[in-house]
Image 1: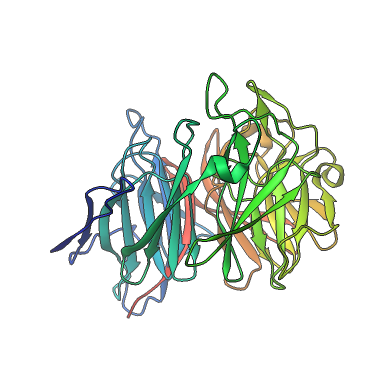
Image 2: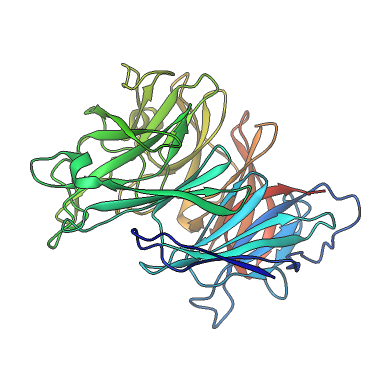
Length: 418
C-alpha cells in the first residue's frame, strides 16, 4: 500500500491523505462477474432494514437494470459515513462524503477485468457544496455561508493521477456586489466550452435568515476561465429567479453549445418562499456571455408544475423531476416529464408510480443510456424501491430492477478497464 500526503498550506485543506489501494473490494451482487464482462451498472442504496437509521450507503453492481431484484443484505461495498454523493467521470466512480462542515472521505473505484469494483484511492478532503467534472478533472468548491468570512475555496482534482493539482479562493461578497452585503452561493458547476459557469443565488449569511435574500427575482452566473479559475464576468437576468437550487444543477449545454438555464423559483426571505416569477428556462447562446431573448415558462406549459431537478438527454430534451406545490426550497419533485426546450413543450411521463405514494427520487445522479434514448431513475415508494427506465421518445416509464432493503440514491455505469 502506497501512502502520500498532499499539503495545502493556506486554505485549510489540511492533512489530506491520499491512499492508493492494491486490493480489490468486491462490490458484486449475486450476479457474479464472469470472464468477458464489458461493463456493469452501479447502484447506490441506503439500507432500510430495522435498526439501520443513520447507516451509510452500499455500492451494488449488476449486469442489468431492466428486470429482477438485488438486495443490500450481504452485498456490495459499505460506504464510510452517511450523506454520500456520487460522480462518474473518466470511467471512474467517485463516492464523496458530505461531512457536515468537517472533512469528508472521498473514495474512487474502477471496474477491473473480472467485473469487480476495485478501489483506487481513499482520502480526506474538505466538505464541498458543489462539484462537477471539467475535462479530465473534478472541480470542487467549499462555499462559505458566513458574512464575516465570505470566502469560497475551490480545488481541482485530476482524475488520471487521482491527486489535487490546484486550489484557490473566491470572495463571494465581492462577487455578489450587493449594497446589502449579501454573499454569492454557487448552486452548481457547469463546463461551457473552455470555461466554467457558476450559477449562484445571493444570501444574507447572517442573523436569523442566513440563506434568505432580498433579491429573490434575479438570476446570476459567474464565468471563470479554466483551468486558471480567473473571474471574467457575471451573466445577469431578471426574468427568472436563480438558476438551479442548493446542491442541484440547473445549467446544461446542448450539442450546439447553447446553455439552458432552469429556475425552480424557490428563493426565500425570512423563511418564506419569496420568488414571484414562474419556474422557467432561459438560454445563453454558444460563444456568448449574455442571455438572449429565449424564454420558456415551465409552469404555463405543464399546467402548474415546477421543475426541481433535470437531466439533459440530447436533442433539446430533458427528463425533468416535477412538483405541483412548493413546500420548501429543498424539496425534490415526485413526478416526471419530458421537457423539450427546442419546441417548448412539457410531456408527462406515464408508467411511474402515483406521485402521492412517492417517498424519494434519485434526483442527484441518474443514468442516461449510451444511445440517449433512455434515462434510468430510482423511485422509492411506500412499498419499495425500483429503477424505472424512461423512454424519452414515447415519454413512458417501465419498472425495472428492484432494490430490496434499500432506497436508491444513484445509478451509473462503468466499463471494464483492461
